[in-house]
Length: 332
Ligand code: NDP
Image 1 (cartoon, rainbow, N blue to C red):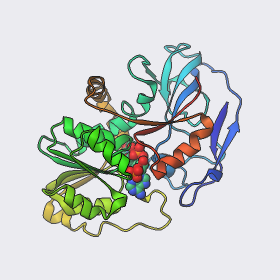
Image 2 (image 1 turned 30 degrees about the horizontal axis):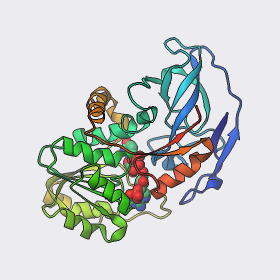
Image 3 (image 1 turned 135 degrees about the vertical axis):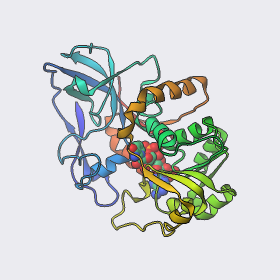
Image 4 (image 1 turned 120 degrees about the vertical axis):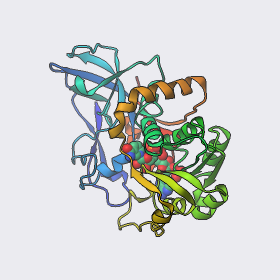
């Protein structure tokens, strides 16, 4: 099977030269192991961090070793109790066609409950990120005005819609194209949205939020964060989920210049790591899958084909080529 290795640690924006597609033998499972043929691979922004040597919340990828990432696949051989050939599993040995690993690190998924790719997106890690950030960190409540950046992405699109479903008075989103803005308003039910490439974020946000905002769900950092602080209401909450505008920076990035407003406004800003919130998983799956089934929560995916497309999918994700969750479909 083919697998992607990190060939070099990117400086600034990664390029295709930083990766290598390698043919590797398929290993039969030993005791307690399963062999899985992957059907969907996930590419996610946090992977950019793992390509650097600096230790962050996830360990750096090793050079010239297969990369890790979320994936869903079908068990083709099992030496593990409770896993049979034909079962579908969610696991963390993505970026490759076949994986042999300890079955205890896999979670069975039901292919009849949802399309398999949904377990990497709306019903998976990005969905839980949105749910935990809004309900637990922002403690969103009826009447709140909520602003989310990266709003047409995997996490952001779910954030805006859950906020509405939880009774937010007004939901505002920003995204990087006019088509994405249209999707937010016309399909996802956002009350307002703007293209951050069309003008200064601060001006566009102020126009979209004449009465200020109570919650900012930050996927972007930088100008977006500064603009959100400016319009935040008294006792506002900021969920620091991601700062994708800085992931490829080669120089230290400026702090929000208006951070002193934290005092007068008594706002709270708290980091979110999805890994801390898996205790919410059953509640999240129950609530969100019901909304998906009823059509109250919509989601999009951008799907590329074949393991060889994974690097282009990842680079495209960093540039904003995706609408909704970016996934790679492998032939099944
Ligand atoms: P997305 O599906 O949102 O894809 C990334 C998007 O980021 C792109 O589509 C692009 O959309 C946008 N983007 C890229 N560069 C910029 C920029 N300079 N300014 C503004 N937007 C930019 O990815 P996810 O939903 O998976 O992740 C969203 C955020 O959440 C990321 O910051 C990620 O790191 C974070 N995250 C954090 C987790 C945690 O536990 N803390 C867990 C999961 C995700 P556009 O066209 O709009 O520019």
